[in-house]
Length: 89
Image 1 (tube, rainbow, N blue to C red):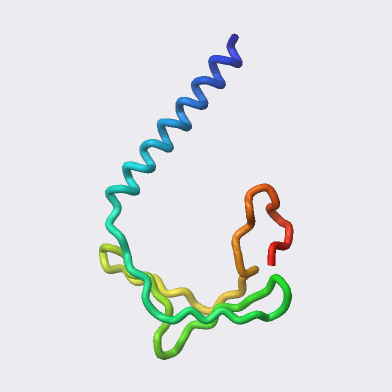
Image 2: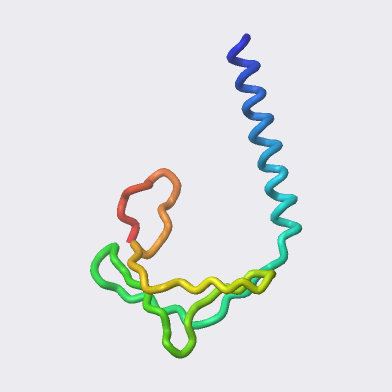
């Protein structure tokens, strides 16, 4: 009985938190992506993002803050659910 009540309360709490997130998202003003994206293959599962000197990739937030990534290595993608850690490229 006690574990069932705890499970119900946990599910309700998670549901309410998820509902609030949607409201916050809907009130968020959109930003804007600009610039060139240059991702180069190095070897399997290893890529490098190289910023353009002429037109660097950047994201401008609704309050005009600019976020511009520097050179970085990446595995080139997102893991699909259920296979975290496995190679997907």
